[in-house]
Image (cartoon, rainbow, N blue to C red; front, top):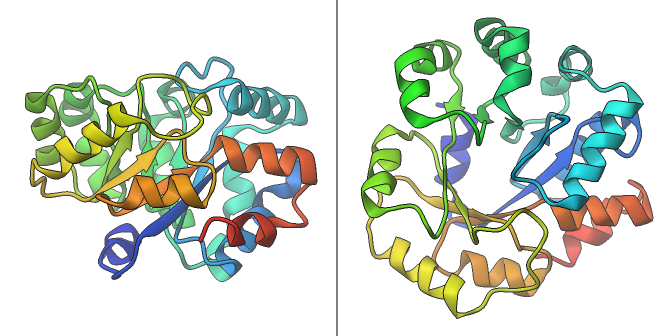
Length: 253
């Protein structure tokens, strides 16, 4: 069984952390992953930096720009991760945009992910229909779960299509804005969470965008399986460095 599905069966609310590979420094990637697992994080999203990250707010965009300047590439990330499964056992997900994957070659990219021990991929700009028609067989051959996003604006019909196509969790974007731009959840988000919960979807939902502390983590997970923290974690390591990751995680749980 895929590590993502194993983790989803655990009887607790899951905390997933997103960070940008190669940031703050090029060779920080492995230490960040190891420290996150050591401090009780359930899943990790490893951001593959891209020059035009449309869904990302200024914090993640800034970390992507810095990582690219540091010399991070797809090939470099795969090289950094080649021995990751000797020390890390939690699910690892590569999150990025389709262009770098296409440039690398989709089959080669997926095969490399499988070889390294990556469990899932999030590509916000890979349409569901194109994935199903052209790439689903490649993902499945390599044991990779493709994770789809929904937003408050996604229609019920579309959500049910995504649920039927999913085999893991649904990434539930808390708002229609870019990452890192909210300061808590209001009535609009709460109503959205309730609406999705009442749909009785087959796949659990994990909330992203706007989670930054214990209060927002608890709000986001009241009716879902877990939450993802990205911008707040990147802000933390930008300001404090990577030596106090336990201090950040301890404030969330």
